[in-house]
Image (cartoon, rainbow, N blue to C red):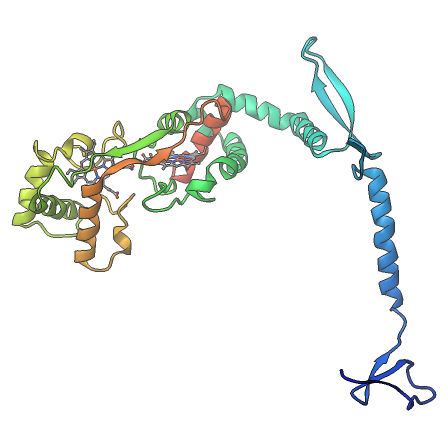
Length: 318
Ligand code: HEC
Ligand code: HEC
């Protein structure tokens, strides 16, 4: 791209060029824009002008052009309780009000909601029509409010957020317990044993925990651990139960199944890794790190009830 000399070798009949050549023979064609491209270009200009007329657009002084498009929606007059048709210039809020009105107009849906409100949990579960409704509405509610932590399908994250699809429950899996969990929220708590137990006691009790789910065979060490678990020193039985199956009143985990809520045992390859992970967990405990928020006041009671049924059926509905 150095010198910029006049091109003198244009042949008649060839495509027109701009008449410049760079580096001796590099020329630039002088083609008109393709017709389709021009029409698209004019089209976008026309679209923009129409759009400015129809929808809110340019600022004018301390207000803005409101646009010609209107939406209709039904509101209930607070004083008289009567429904009124209202017309409003288009904006996202009036659009939302229109959409919500349409949803409420759907009589079938309204009737179904009333039916679910009045029914007991057992009645809902036995009625396929109500369950269909619960699944479709529940999915939306769950996606909006719960999926951020528990995952879209409710599968959770080991150590952080419980898996709601496995029919193992910290706080109880019956629908009224799940309703209570959602409504009141829950706070996982287990004391830190790092300062309470001596290192060899911590090691022994961990050996015992490993035998409970068949990860290790009983040994002398695990027998000593059992005494710690079931006795005053550890007092683990107090929250996990003497059978170590967990107590829903404490939100404690079942230690006898192969399902791990917090310590990710299935991800560990060697017995040493497994033991180390449990030992570290028991030493540290759980305090203020696993909090299920309260939803009462943030979600309608009906929605909480619906979610309780939805979550219950995610977990195999036993
Ligand atoms: C900020 C993250 C977060 C959000 C959002 C959240 N949860 Fe939770 N949830 C948790 C944590 C953490 C726990 C575990 C508490 C514990 O350790 O006891 C939990 C526990 C639960 C449990 C008890 C599980 C069991 O095994 O007993 C249920 C049921 C549940 N959540 C349902 C929901 C539903 C339904 C929603 C949406 C309305 C929701 N959660 C939203 C974090 C969250
Ligand atoms: C004050 C009640 C309490 C005591 C005492 C207690 N735990 Fe826990 N433990 C819990 C709770 C609650 C959880 C579940 C925490 C959560 O979900 O947030 C838990 C979880 C665990 C877990 C993780 C299980 C999993 O699925 O990942 C292990 C392991 C465990 N406890 C072992 C012990 C041992 C060993 C002792 C005794 C040295 C003990 N616990 C004493 C309440 C207790």
